[in-house]
Length: 257
Image (cartoon, rainbow, N blue to C red; front, side):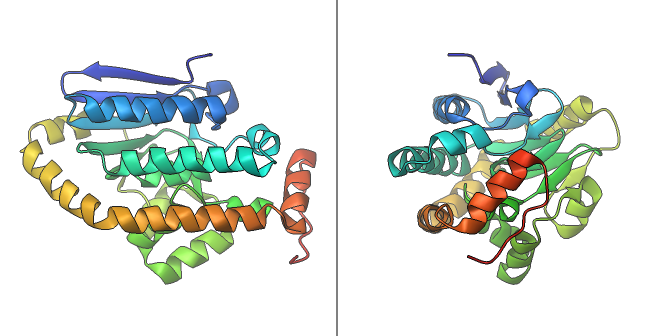
């Protein structure tokens, strides 16, 4: 099994790196399995700060279409969705300060994952999209929950329905990222972690834990509802058309059924 998620430590900082650069860190079964295990490992570590990023030119292009097609049966789909649920709940409630270092595209499930962090720092060339709608699906990975947290339900619905690819500056203006770096990206992330290291981290983490404990049941409920909704959407003709159009690199012709 190839190492599709890397984990390193430096002082009190853990860095998790999605490592399928040639596939823009699209999440297949292997990557999701390893990410779940790495997040569990970080949970048990002494790290107080976690940086989540992607190798190469992207943070993550989202779920791997091949994995989606291979898990067409209900059993495979349920396994993938349960894995995503476990991983997202563990990551969201980590007793650490988390930073998504978005160094390129963050789309679909990749964007949901980025939104799960306490801070989202984007490079100027980043592109971000909750673009499930393009293949006739709904967000998963807690995308509904995280968008509502940042935008409120009305604007969250609109972002989901539009499925627009946003530039880093557009995402910043919308409140979907917390900062866009203007300098060297790696150095900028070091500056952010340096500021955190100079803060009373135990107090920061205690505040995070209060919020996480309160909202964890709501996130779990959203994840369950997303699984049920996604299961229904996978049976629609619009989804089949969306997948076919994606594979044929053309605009889908949706019929609303």
